[in-house]
Length: 201
Image 1 (tube, rainbow, N blue to C red):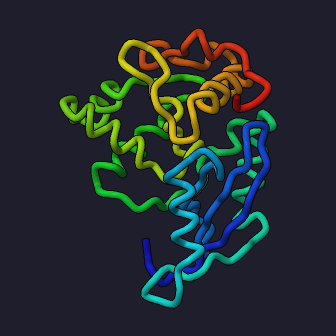
Image 2: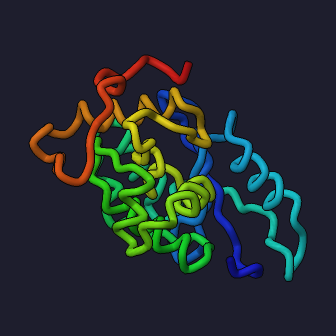
């Protein structure tokens, strides 16, 4: 990340917890994650909030709906899944991580892919473990949908915001999109995510 840019902070209440959103002044989404129960997100917020003058990251600047990003995420939780389509994301990562995160955005709403499938999509089928690490390092949850990645046996695996949130997000998407829109040849939907729970736990 450009260490001299201003970062705009907004927060959003959702059915499964409060989200923090960081954007740059160009309206690009930098960070999106739950504010509680998400160790990496909590570390990032502490880092940015405690930083001082350049070359360190400036203190966060509270902002309302920077670049329309907060409204788009809110619309997603209200059932307009495609509100996330095309949102500009600028996440710092290695070329490999960036390739993985790009592949994640190609997974259809409500569908899932395994780590191995993602590795094959980016042309590196042996890099399953590295894909898992890149998935876990994703700083822009939901918009870059790491919650749609599952284990090779079809089970839900680790998620920074917690497994119950992952289950809820998959179920929420499944409810709001027709089953025929999910290409079964490249992804699948766990039966355990058929109905959204009422909360994160």
